[in-house]
Length: 264
Ligand code: MN
Image 1 (cartoon, helix red, strand yellow):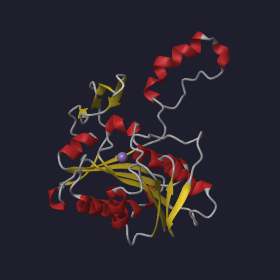
Image 2 (cartoon, protein in one colour):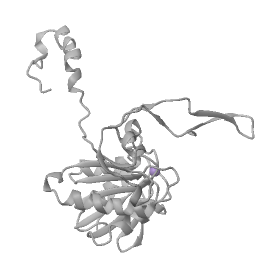
Image 3 (cartoon, protein in one colour):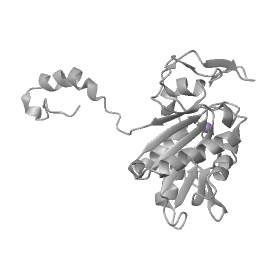
Image 4 (tube, helix red, strand yellow):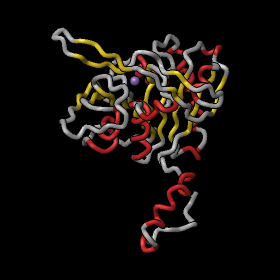
């Protein structure tokens, strides 16, 4: 089996080295990772700049772009870069959580999404601490999760987001299947002044705060469980169809798409 490893923290990240070490023996491991950190790159593609690919070893490359670029280049793009093509895409292990609403910003999750869009099963792993100390435990969790994943052929088109509490293995209570949690937004943009007296802004600072919800990813991780959230690509809010149906009717019956039979 060919496994493509990538991340958004960049080629030199401890989490990527940990992932690679964790997966020794699972198959042929290929690393195609951003040459620089791309955290919060989301699902961005680089369209206006050239992508430079640098070979670091027989199965290791950097790309001068985003995590999504890396997966695309590895799977589709570059002649001879990854032959044969991957059977599985694994992104991570991210330094810091990728939970709830923040999944939309995540370069780690986006790399897995790109894998899924290209027809491959894909997993994203994050250590939920901003400064992880338990990388060995995270590696063991990755191995256990991957064994479960590969053991069930029904998961061959799955997209899975895994967040691991930064605890020693004996402190991890188990696995919890969760939904995405709800982030509480706060003022997080700092205004500063540069040496020439001009204002500038910096996003971030405080760690995110979450709505309490024991069945969410955040709830599970904060109770000491590994959070496993199966994701889907279809963002359609089927439960909102009813609210928008009057828009169809307001333009008359000729639109031809009105149907009470629309799938929910
Ligand atoms: Mn990151």
